[in-house]
Amino acid sequence: MNPTALLAAISVPADWIGLRLVRETAVVYHVRDGHPQAQGRATTWGAMVEVSVQGRWGYGATPNVTPTGLRQAADHAYRHAQLAAPRTHTLRERPPATGQYRTPVGQSWRDVSPGELTDLLVKICHTLKVSDTIVCTKASLTTTERETWYVSTNGADLYQQFYYISNHFAATAQAGTEVQTRSDHGMLARCYQGGLEWLFTADLWARVARIGEQAVELVAAENCPTMRTYLVLAPDQMLLQIHETVGHPLELDRILGDERNYAGWSFVQLSDFGHLQYGSPLMNITFDPTVPGEFASYAVDDTGVVAQREYLIRHGLLVRGLGSLESQMRAGVPGVACGRACSWNRPPIDRMGNLNLEPGTGSFADVIRDIERGIYMESNRSWSIDDYRRKFQFGCEYARLIENGQLTKTYKNPNYRGISLEFWRNLVRLGGPETWEMYGSPYCGKGEPNQAIRVGHGSPVAVFANVEVFGGG
Image 1 (cartoon, rainbow, N blue to C red):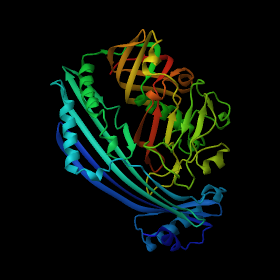
Image 2: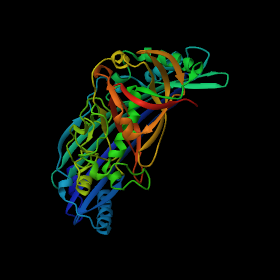
Image 3: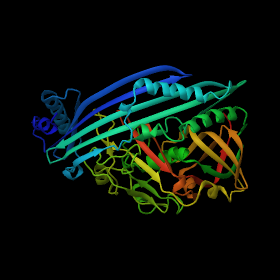
Image 4: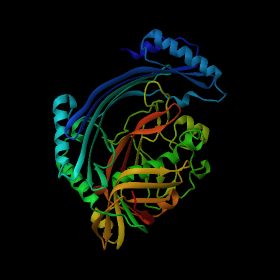
């Protein structure tokens, strides 16, 4: 396949033409209670033609990746660009990116047969069943290869090859009418770029056994008490906290109102950039698609902008938004290389990519040492947040009481609530690099038509003061 030759076959009289080809193949394995439930392979393959006509964008997508199919898609895009509402764009918003990117892979999944991978998931299920109290076990694995080619009439010529791996396992315990489920860091949180090295970790079997044991522990535990206290969040729960109360509110297209019919608006105003004290001085949030292994790493976004690490919030001050060059032009606010599309049949929109909370200092023991009384929570299981991303209520799978700097009794059904700015301004301690962990999600939804896209979030252990926590199913 020659993307440049395919581009040359398009002949609409546009000021600029871009061609993005995407091929993605995913293999999924599911095992329940030690019995294989499903194994499937799916491939999607197609092209998006984008044109600029007198400062207006138009799009045409097709699964027919031939000169004929691309010409038809280009005609569609050209007609829609002519009909689009007046809005001045420039080719600055589609820079001519060149080069290649490939996900570093330690161990290819092609080196292990599907039967061996299924057998591993069966063994995980059996190991999760630490006692008869465990009534259900689940294990799954998804491996994905994605290739993108991007060429344009102003000189873009880019190839990127991504390898994604997501694995999940969970155990459900029951004692009488009490039912509790414990998973490996939350639903599908273990999402990475790379190969089987992210599955065959040194601590795999210790994690499996611990999840089974904690599920049994939870059915006998007390409900989390209701109180205002210090809340210590593990990195796997910070995944959601960052995503919902920092990531989505900072998307420039959301602030501009593009998402209000579907995904909501934001409490952040354009005038807040450079002025709003979003959190305490400990809060440093970076947009960083350059982290090896993190789920949303890439070299160039889907509009041709080179990806680089940028501070969105520095020492608590809001300095930059999550917006592509197009949104930056409309908003007059600095942004990042985040114009991303979930597939060949979607245009790029503002997406958060890798969004990370930078670490502080100290071990986990150091972080909780001075807390006389507080609650430690792990692994998200529920979330609720308003349309403006201002008020939230999140639930976790597992909690421990902190007394005099030590973890003591286990609590079930832990929840907490807050207001985004107030919550982040009450950030009082961050663990060091030794507590920093990264996770991800394949299902960040946004856009009309919907786009479910991959995101990554890294964080240390974090301590927040004066947080309302409570129990209940």
